[in-house]
Length: 193
Image (cartoon, rainbow, N blue to C red):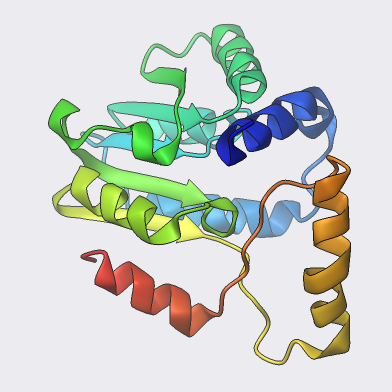
């Protein structure tokens, strides 16, 4: 099974539990949502990559012309579509797609969102280049992701070297690659932002 197929299977398997779990830091989530909204305009066409169960896309939909939410896990998109139907929003589309599945020739977006995603991408550099190619001139890329701590210490080293690989082997964790903030910033710039 290909790496991304394993990740799709992992996220689909946990999608219902993921959807049922409350957001751990609601204040932080709302702050991210408000900050994201501050960059969006009513006429914007937005792409959210790694939309999960669609909550963020649905909350942002009233503030933009259209938002497309994509995720590699069919289970996540199924839940997102259910939520969309419940809310009756017409300017939201959800579909199964990985980051590199998006074709720049299909059109560019005013804003691309990738919240809590970059540390989960197998080919971060190629994905960032694709995101840059999908962003209109003058458009924005908005992301928030987990990065490696500046002073990781023994606890972080053990989690990264032992706990995560063990959990991945038994199907309890997806692929993760924590990089430092300066490294992430360099990669984003190198991609064209």
